[in-house]
Image (cartoon, rainbow, N blue to C red; front, side, top):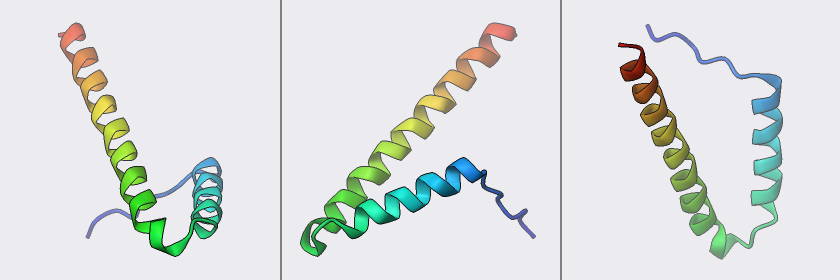
Length: 60
C-alpha cells in the first residue's frame, strides 16, 4: 500500500488560500485558472527535478 502523503501547515494554508481565491473566480473562467495553475505547478516540479539531477551529477 502506498504511503499517505503528509502536508506541512504552510502547504495546507497555501491550499486554503488557493481554494478561497478560486471561489472568487467566475465559474466560466474557473477551468482556465485551474489549468494555468496546474501548468505552473508542473513547471515548478520539472525545474526541481532538473535541479536535483544537476546536483546529483555534480556530486558524481
